[in-house]
Amino acid sequence: MNKKRKIRKGFVKIAKSLARIFLLVLIVVIIFSSGAYLATTNKTISRLAEGQALYLGKVTGKYDKVDGKWAQNVDFSLYFEVWEAIKNEYVNKGDFSEKKMFYGSLEGMVASLGDPYTEFMDPQKNKEFNEDMSGTFEGIGAEIGIRDEILTIISPIDGTPAQRAGLMPGDKILEIDGEPTQNMNINEAVSRIRGTKGTEVILDIFREGTEDIQEVKIIRDTIIIRSVTYKALEDDIFLIKISSFNGDTENLFSLAIKEILALQPKGVIIDLRSNPGGYLETSVSLLGEWIDGEVAVIEGFGDDHQMNYRANGLNRLKDYPTVILINAGSASASEILTGALQYYDKAIVVGEKSYGKGSVQIIRDLKDGSALKITMAEWLTPGGKNINKEGIIPDVEVELTYEDYLNNRDPQLEEAKRVLKDFKK
Image (cartoon, rainbow, N blue to C red; front, side, top):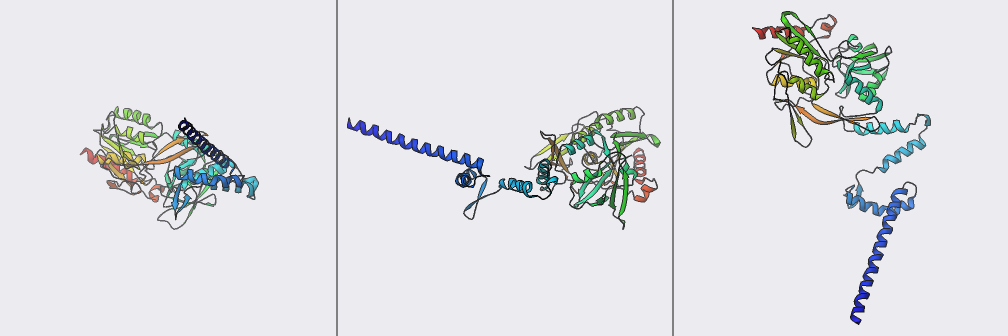
């Protein structure tokens, strides 16, 4: 009997000990929770929570051990500390905008990657981007990018104020309305160059091969882009101009091919000069007019796996001699189309070395109307060649000089026609 009482007392002691431990743990959790919530305003509670935070950080991998001490990799409290300091201490209170500062911090985070094609777009910039892809917007009509850390014209769009003003691929933009472009990101540059129809923007341009900086005044206009146009040339040759790979390109190209084939062409010239690119899937779809079931482009991802995109289509141009025209403004989807046709010997490439944009971006729309355009892969030609910053070398290299442009000469097109005539012999 005494033995049973001793056993019961032992169980009671254990139960009381467990209850004390549970209560202690509960108090610690409450203190930690309170400390985490009030740490920014109550230093005493913050110190009580510090030990628990270090433990939690160790468990969750937020801290690394450096010189025997736990050091946090990323202390997000610094962000809010800077935020509050600016909000409370910045001298020009009228210039303070929480939304503008928040979006600016997101832009800075993305810019830290050092990739000119990965960018955060606030709702207004995202709206402008979608207008670009739809083919209607107000501005000067030029694709710009960062090349060698300098703001550069990738391509002026045919029939736009930029082209009429004489801008050419490769032109360096040194100033926009007197504002130096050094360290200016793409978003800010686009915002400064765009504007209401009828207003003026002044660009200071440096062009390789010249000594002087040119001041170019351009009147903005409504830019309406029909991405595919065509016309008949002599000797039953047809010229198809693709200015971009947008939402309307696939249907317009298909319609153009149908109408051209009804006229029994002897050959086609696909003009991709100053075409800055667009949707990868559209370029793959267009390739289906020449190749069927073959690899059109290869995507390479950060974890070293690859994905093949195969072209499937009507193959209506597979038996027609084809020449592709490119220049330094031919980029992205233009290079995908050119690279595949060159690899499969379906076309002869004429002109100048292309831009060399060998990366693929996806758009993630965010809940407030903003968006993140992020580089998620590199693309390779069907032969596995990465053309990033290297470009595609034409089979027949022909330069189009500024003097040619001023005198309405097009030696590249003339060479393309000559090549097609040799095709027929």
